[in-house]
Image (cartoon, rainbow, N blue to C red; front, side, top):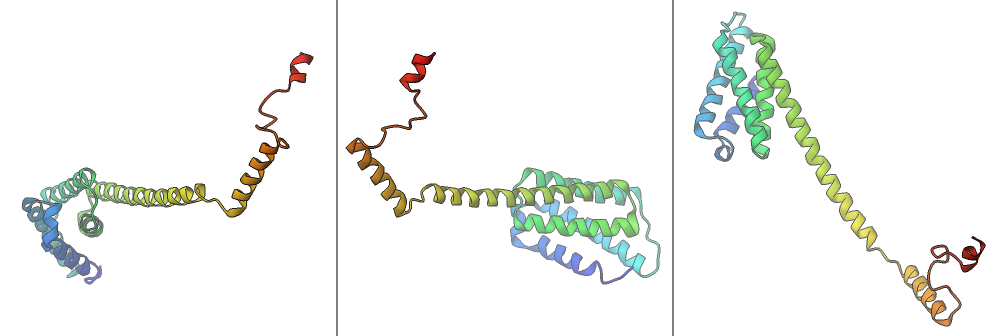
Length: 183
């Protein structure tokens, strides 16, 4: 287990949780709870990297699992802003790393997977919405596209109709009188 693998992740999580904008997503109680869980995971990982065997209690795994489930609930109820997306991604990475090397609890694993799927699904939907908006704008531009040759053709057809040389309507749209007589 590499000691440097998780450190940038924890530093980023701490930076996010101390950022002033975090209060738009979490209240102070939730921030405190996440900080406490992160510190516990960090201590366990540090003990494991030093060659020790950290004590993994039911309370610890339950705390990590509940924090992830709380994060999942928040992600489902609130708009996913960049800061919420970042804290979620970093929390997933740290929790999965902790669980793989220390906790080995199925609830934590399932919560990490559920969060990852939800975030990926949300980001895919946001990409789809942006793509749809772009296509809609292009279709509107295409619909309003009228090159000069089209205008000339319309004018030419109109002048033919005025002179009586062109049919007024599409001849295939109206049945001919001869067709009615044959029946």
